[in-house]
Length: 387
Image (cartoon, rainbow, N blue to C red; front, top):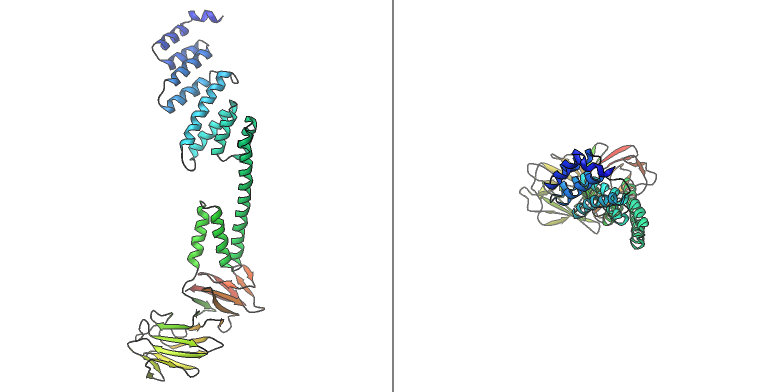
């Protein structure tokens, strides 16, 4: 009989331990005397006296071991543990760490077991577990929060669908050469999900490949070719078209298109711009296809084509370099298409019937060229070298 326990040695030792404030020892002795309720009570007193949160939690967990599941005291202790862990999670800012997630999961589990459904729902909310949160809110009868969650979930699902659609649009348009549309799709995706660092990184890498300066250098069938989308071009060591030589200045010569006429001007170079071997002064109109000299060691053939200029370096360090200059469609030999600068971006438009691949993708429409692109046009490799 229970009253006989007062004569048990362990019981008397437990009482003495309680008297001197050693509640853990008292709990162990009560357990030895087969008095689990008293062991739990001693540990709960010990927990109440703790100022350190971790020590208090440890005492509460120990007390719970001696209580019968489902009883009112068991639910009370479960609630204390769960609320303590939940309060920790609520004080944290940002995305929970793995350890913090484990504590929130424990809080949710204990609070739900103690039938504190509203608080359990809050823990599940911090874990972003919407289905579990909804279950607990339904059990709690919290209609207002449940309706708000359903509305939020509907909006979130709609946002996720739109985000997936935009990412798919980015991938598809990038693959077929519609790079401006690809960039726009990424920007819209980032507006929907501004904290997604992977999207921001995709946009950063895409932007780095766009070509600036209305010029592009290609390698077609092993030959380097330059295109300049402007009505005029400077030639020199640091010109729009880089032409090198011992007698070439940084900005040596300018060629200008105006109404179907080509004009040439020396830009104050050290060794002059030569026309038929004679240095020119001021700006001169060229009479048909001709050859100009940049100093004595570089010669460039200048030919007027259908609305654009074709330049061919005949002599110098960049011998055999070809360049095309103009505001409209620019064409080079057997390239299999034309190139123009739409909105400042070099855009390649295949000829009708041309077989074009961008990477592994067959393409029939215009392609906005990016640095590092590799195209195959009628079986010939075209590489984008840069601006």
